[in-house]
Length: 376
Image (cartoon, rainbow, N blue to C red):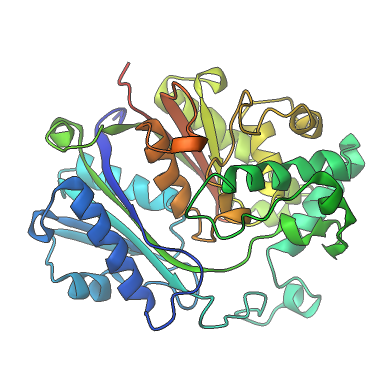
């Protein structure tokens, strides 16, 4: 059964980002939900679906705790241990398509920064942890080193990811990191996890984000421009760790093929790209695997300036997780919706009609969503 244009995002909400002392993760998630409901013109009693996401310690808890704080008893509720908003959005679309709910709220909150969470501390004991493989920068660093070896990608080419996203962030009032980042300053910084620098790796932060998703039939009833879910795809790579070149995550190309087929579109139809970016390496990989440039030519593509403000393919126009805030990709969808509605001021992408958001669960699963103000 096709899900094309069966559901639409009708409102989004985002709290301030950075350090939110005195607030719990569930409370921050509820703050974001209230902002989204206000934008949608909804009362909490109108919500019959709730999906929350637990990504790590000091993030919003299960649906029962968030629902209790909101004071709702929805027909349908669920909690994902790794939502990145893509997986959460897909679950909402499926619930609506199956008739389990009609108006679903997606909620995420985090207070990892004020909690002083040691993000690199392993959650368990294994051989990887014993070898220092305790942070996302470890596998990402291996992936970049492999890419450099195979294709000759240079530090300067790769640096255009962080530099471009900082330029976008400087136009975003919500962004945490807005200090200018010229290429010479980027290159002058030492490696933090060779060959990654500080600006290639996200920093944890506090904040909340929420979306309201409803059936396409109801979308016109809401005050804002509906953003239709044109296509979705998920592909698992549960055995990926046994593959020789798994650090390059070639199975992402399968997600790309599936999402384009689901939407009936291709790379040329995408006006803006959003990539969940705990490190800049994921952006490099997505550009190649989703067909915006041939595999191995991501460095050249970046150096040509396509991802910068005014470029041919704007990428992470919010500044991404590298410069805006680390919300496990939730703010990427918030930004994409606002861009598609023409609400982004200085950083607005002119004439934007269709955007794509890509995310992964590191080495075990990939997901993508194509959203559009057009149903054509």
